[in-house]
Figure 1 (tube, rainbow, N blue to C red):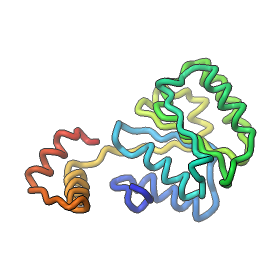
Figure 2 (figure 1 turned 30 degrees about the vertical axis):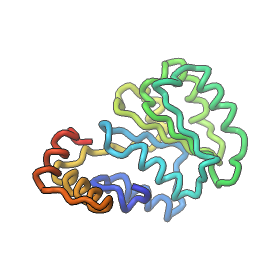
Figure 3 (figure 1 turned 90 degrees about the horizontal axis):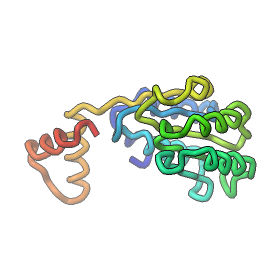
Length: 181
């Protein structure tokens, strides 16, 4: 999906984010929780785009590979610089639950006193591993797993857009194999 209206099955997230943008009530930190393939990172990118953030001011960090205190120290130093050409510097921290305890502690200060031009979206499949001190300073959104019927609809639609047609049984098989993703 490239816009909120393209996101299927997550109105509890997309409707609230659209309203926040419309009402200019943007948080400085979001925690997106849910199983794999539910759209957490895609929605984070859409949020950035809807806020006018360009690629130059969008930073994606894979916390599974960059999980230590040194990486968070670099992030903390970088947040104080103004955005290049956008209203915000936008950080997506994917697999956030993989950060070390020391990294979370270093990150906490930034979340407590963030610069006005910075927005963080932390995406995780394991909310219970994100410290309560981080969760309490973030808007938390829980992504639901799509139903099999919803997946069949999306699979059929994508195939059609790509110039293919699928029998319903084939789309159902693909949806089954996707395991909710």
